Image (cartoon, rainbow, N blue to C red; front, top):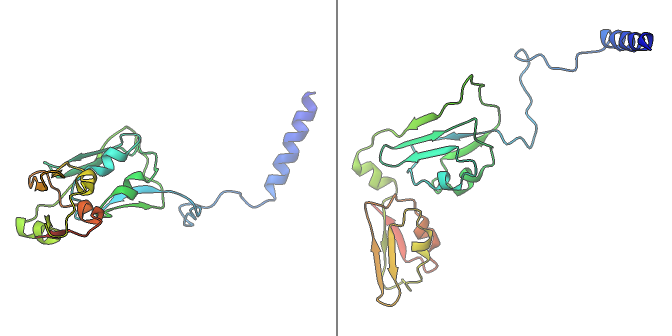
Length: 186
């Protein structure tokens, strides 16, 4: 019984001695990623408005967004690369890039801080929503789409109210309006 195992191993060893290697010569040859590889999340922090939609849509709670501090953080170990955060981002500042993240020895949060911008630049970047009362039908769709709850709409009283402090100028209210009664103005 032992002799057959030795001969089986010897046969395999001899075959492998004359074959090409099955592995690639990384790092000497570039890695060819599979076509359907999801990759990893990357952010353009300059474009982020810290609305928190990505954090709320993350099934593994791998994202943290702090609007007051202007930070966006990811725990790469917990991220499952599902892409939900990329699909819900109103400013399209999140992307899925092919490739693997560098391995770490311990579980850490990678934090990105939004650069400081003068108030005039922030307003020019997208501005706050302004409603045209002649076009509005007070359907409440804008208020339902607002990720921060910054809009209040009363159908009976025909009141449309914006909380400027809570608004992050994401533009979801304007895109949800069926009558195009909301414009983003600086």
